[in-house]
Amino acid sequence: MSKRNPYDDYDAIDPFANDSTLDNNLPQIPTGDTVMFPVVDEDDDIDPIDAIGSDGFGPVADPYVPEQPPVDSTEAFPKTMVRSNFGEAVSGNTAVRPDAPLRRKGHKHGRNASQDAYAQYPPSPQQSYAPQDAARGKAPRQRRVRRRRRFGFFPKLLVFIAIVVGVYWLVAHPIDEKLAFSPAEQQTLNGKLAWEIPCTPYYVLALGSDAREGDTYSRTDTMMLVRIDFLKAQLTLVSIPRDTMVQIEGQGTQKINAAYAFGGAGGAVKAVSELMDVPIHHVAVVHFEELTDLVDYLGGVTVNVPVSVYDPEYTGLILDEGTQTLDGEEALLWARTRYGFEDGDFQRQANQRILLTSLMNRMLSLSPSEMPGALDKMGELIGTDLRCYNLAPLFLRFKFSNPIIYSCSVPATPETIDGVSYVIADEAALAQMMQVVNAGGDPSEV
Image 1 (cartoon, rainbow, N blue to C red):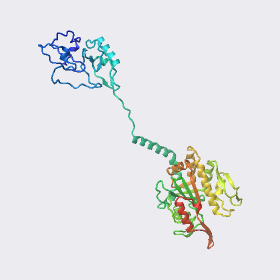
Image 2 (image 1 turned 60 degrees about the horizontal axis):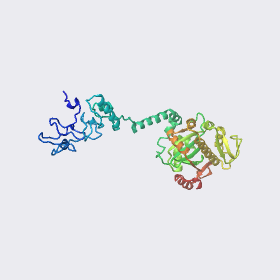
Image 3 (image 1 turned 60 degrees about the vertical axis):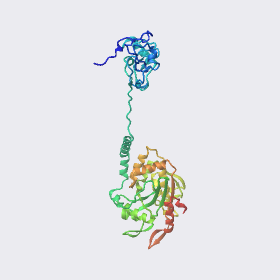
Image 4 (image 1 turned 30 degrees about the horizontal axis):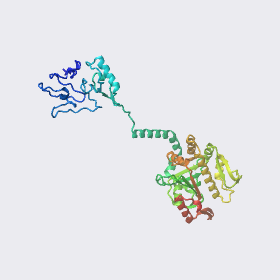
């Protein structure tokens, strides 16, 4: 059986109803500030106030003072306390007005008094203390704070990576398959390409092939070395004359455009790397027959024709000098034409650099929704070891910056040797020009 407080069943007794007589058989009722009682000798006539004292202990020597719970503690005071001339009654953990009548626990008036006290002395925000709990003498209940579960950084990162991989697989992977070399072409590149160091300039060899249907390899009609500086958003285009005389292993003295016919893309990379004395990191083979589809998809390309073209005999192309908007067929013929120019193939190389620059600017003007279609057309036009994860950052870097484009040609002079027309590169001038190119300068000023 649980112990029962004898004061729960009786009305509170005022110990000061009669100041002259004190019933020593009854213990003193504690106030809200103490729970100790003085020891009173029945032979002494002591005033109750003097006996209890202003602090509730009176003359008791070295009294035991229990540790009081803090005001906001959840520990409850004794269930019932009576008011006195020097204290206030406390019910539970809620102070009650001094003039509130105290009744037996559960009495109507006592419960109402506790409710009034609750309104006058509300609990702290961390506590949940209903008026009915105050009437029953219960301690305040701690409010349970629910915390939302939040995903950590790594789960969010994994979700983001999964989304990126999924989008890439659906959109870019089909384009990558079109851009990829055939297995036979890729085999020729084994061991020929240098490793690219991220965020550093690198070289791409662009080859223009006029291979007809059924041809495995053919001579390259266009050869261009492209230096790309991603951080500076800079391109340097260096045209290599197709008739440049070089030494090809196992083939002796040859024109450099024959390197592709003998050894595929790998043979061309080796020949150009030795001539220009630079490592080549990527290669792209452009099939001119499909150039018309890309230009028509872009709605034409605007170029600045430096020299008027009048070639009715070979290409049938007639263009005036100045700004012209070319369709796919006109752009292809203009890139191929070399007859009728005073500088012959050198002028054609300049025209090809202008066309490539104009195509790049037209591509950069596309919206993100139009870009996948343009890359798909490029997949039919170009075979390369580059992929969308190489091209997309480069496209964004150039699109949101003001790209710098330099262009030049290998310094060389034409010469006929044993009845064969060659272009002989000036080795000293070429070395000086490539120093400027490697440093990111403008080689046209050399």
